[in-house]
Image 1 (spheres, rainbow, N blue to C red):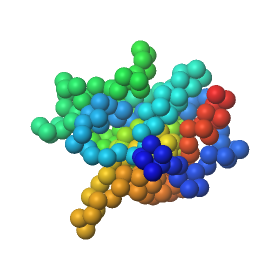
Image 2: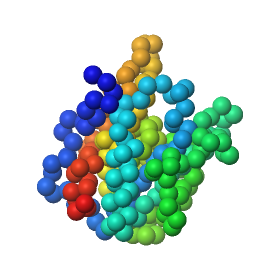
Image 3: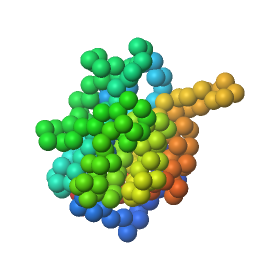
Image 4: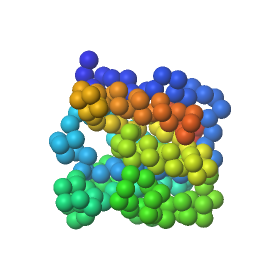
Length: 206
């Protein structure tokens, strides 16, 4: 089985939940969908279809007039893949912001630290956030945890996120799919609702 064939949906994801409702002001947070993640130094990634899912969700959000916030990372280290002014910092072309869509810049894992995103959300009366992007176990997870702790209803879209292989403490290599699923499992119920693209599109009437 290839990575393209992997099922990236978390067991128990709320994809068929008839009660899934997204208010008119539910915000789509597009986390770190930047070219720096195409660098081969990251290693193997799971869910090669994540970008397609993000594209579909962006289209549905735009069609419904709901708010979209793009969160972009800037590396402070000299060897970071997202250094200011480098190609890696640029948004992926298919998922980048359009004119009028908010862009929040960050330098740490959380989209809330050192940014005005919480104030932006509260100022616009937004209480629900839906997270997509990269990577599941790092910036998506950290932002989701903080969103939940700050009192926002938080949803993470399992098939619109992805992770990379990661070395475990014992030196073994954890496959990207395992890393991805573990991160989502840790978020589920405690910090966020785990859903998939199909369920979110149904909730939007798309």
